[in-house]
Amino acid sequence: MTIGQVADLGHLTTVTLTAVNASVTLSTGADFGADSNGAEGESLSTITLNASGGATIDFADGQSIFADSVTDSTTDLALTVSATTAASSTVNVGLIDNTYGTIEISATNAGTLTFDGLTAGSVTATVSGAGNANLGAFITSATNGTGAATINASDMSGSLTVDLSGVTGTANVTTGLGGATSITTSQGASLTTNITLGANNEATDQIVMNGTAAGTINLTNFKAGASNGDAIDIDTGGVEGRNLASGTDDLISIGNAATSLATNAISLATATDTLDLGTVSSDQILVLSGDFATTSLVETAIEASGSRELTFNGAVTASTDVMLIVWDDGSNSYLGVVSFANDIADDATIDAGDSTVTTLVTFTGIADATTLTAANLGTALV
Image 1 (tube, rainbow, N blue to C red):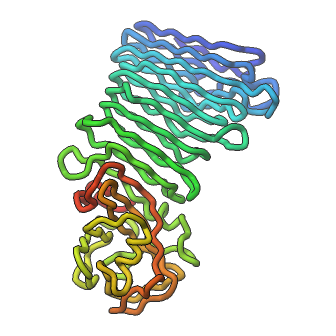
Image 2: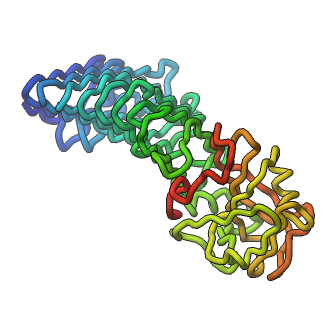
């Protein structure tokens, strides 16, 4: 069954679509409502979608569903979306725009569940079941709400995909046995994405660093090593977008300061003592052996006379150059960025006090940073 365009939602409060054995398409090729005063669904508080028997529900798939999207009033809309899919059944939902309210997703998914995206002051989603779920791109606003996004997929045995690039508050994600096909982290140096991966899920969870300006990323249950190891894609643009140098950041290779990194394959140089970087000229990321309780101790270690003193292969320009470093404190491991206060000549070391280490990623529970492999760090920069 196909239901044509619904252009004016007026005082509509509830939408319920049930497809059993036969598919239902609503507002195909056109938006559901309109982003204009009176035509949006500012009273649309409940959407219920149930697909079974191999049926598919397409609800404005590829289009927009306009809820409280126009007026920032004192009675902002709390929109609840409930979805149930049986095995071999599908629910596809377009972009839900509830800019001036909140969105709560509750889904039991044994088939396939897809959202184009969710826009609101804050978003929460609870998803369970054996099916795969793609929650699309989240856009939240701290002006119109908390800006937070919370996803609880701990009871999923299917895989989760979500893009948190547009989240303006703290993002919290918990996955289940099915793992994560792709979780893209939030954008902005002041923002934090907390991800707890399903323990012992035997899946390769894939985390993607934001490509514009990487926020802080905290990973729990991340598996290091080659056997069922997880991966985080390190985005060169996301690292450089932190603007940690005084000028325009340029991510350089640890082994050759003259090499600017882009989408290079990753190889790791491990420093067990002082290190002449000319001996690891083909490597991109530095890993420190040993335990360093603070970033200050990491800085001291890599500077002149430190236990991991670095002698550079090529000159470093302090106003632009930054490099990647991995270390641990004996309990957790970290990926960070090193920036510099002063230029460094070829074959010279970092003057004491001239380096600053900024943490980007925390790998909670990985006690030894040297167990992280190039594959765990994405195999290649993106």
